[in-house]
Amino acid sequence: MSLEIRPADRVDDELVAAFAELIPQLSSSSPPPSAEQLAAIVDADDSVLFIARDDGLIVGSLTLALYRIPTGTKAWIEDVVVADSMRGRGVGAALSRAALAEAEQRGAKNVSLTSRPSREAANRLYQRLGFEPYETNLYRYTI
Image 1: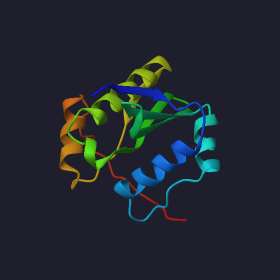
Image 2 (image 1 turned 30 degrees about the vertical axis):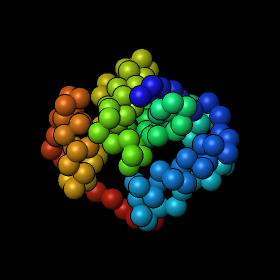
Image 3 (image 1 turned 90 degrees about the vertical axis):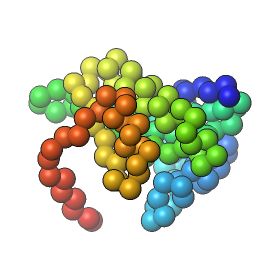
Image 4 (image 1 turned 120 degrees about the vertical axis):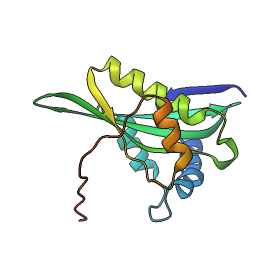
């Protein structure tokens, strides 16, 4: 395995096709993003789309979203997904470490994420990386 983690710097057919394969493994209710939607993420100053490649093939992704509030810069890790065939090989950990390093470099005071309880392996990974459960109520308003 020759794993490489880098921010996406352009959107091409390969990236769009990779997300068409990866997103259904993450969510059954969300369609894969279009090239235009991916470009909006890649081109934004407040997000970083990390791509994991193994032997040149895209095998995972993670989005780091950053935002400034009066009390400092915060960051969220969102939509972590690793190809089924690559799970358990350190891809998620490598993506997460890259995101944590980027968040630190950009001055974030913390990095948050959510993970469904049913994603047991992911929850164990986040705890191994040093994430701690945070007692709060999460509210969602659907538009």
